[in-house]
Length: 214
Ligand code: AMP
Image (cartoon, rainbow, N blue to C red; front, side, top):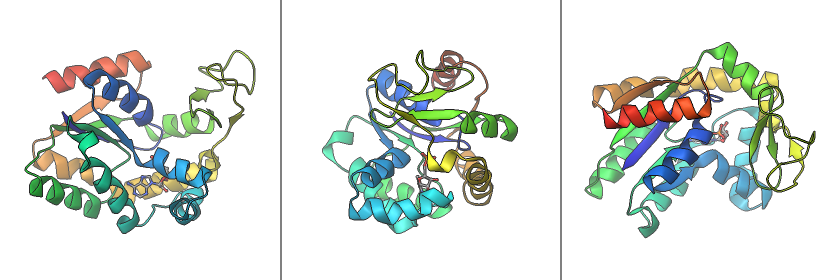
């Protein structure tokens, strides 16, 4: 199974990508997580990406593309993959399509998680993530048992720099401008599966599975 996950920031792509990748036994490639990991380790790539991420802007295509295509072209992706946060521009979607064609592969589907913009802003500004293991919490809906402490590993919970409200609004503008048109791109290819992103994690996973069966 080779899947792309679309939808605005805050729609729950990261959560669903983890669940679905595990369920289908495919390699999870999350570009945001990869950039954050590089940023934490202060690598050259991490320093390049951080400046864009902290402003809510997209990292330039050539940086993203070399990172992603190397992963999905590697033997670890032979059993399939789930792309979270990629593609985000038409240029990225076309480059992905060309590479898959070269390798004689096809996408199975593009899942689009739909969610109203005001719900997105509420979700993202209430989000805290563990600085150690990355597990996300919502301070209103799913707070940790002990304030500020990760229930999984005891790490410190922090707010992502780009989850501040002004940056969230900027990310949504960038989504509308650069990424929203990919829904049409995949619809034209008969690959699009729309899913309502409002509901519990389990409900949304069930909808995704049903959409992939159907
Ligand atoms: P995310 O965790 O998916 O919201 O990604 C966080 C940030 O990483 C984005 O706001 C971008 O700055 C950067 N990023 C992640 N994926 C991409 C991509 N495919 N193209 C460009 N920038 C990206």
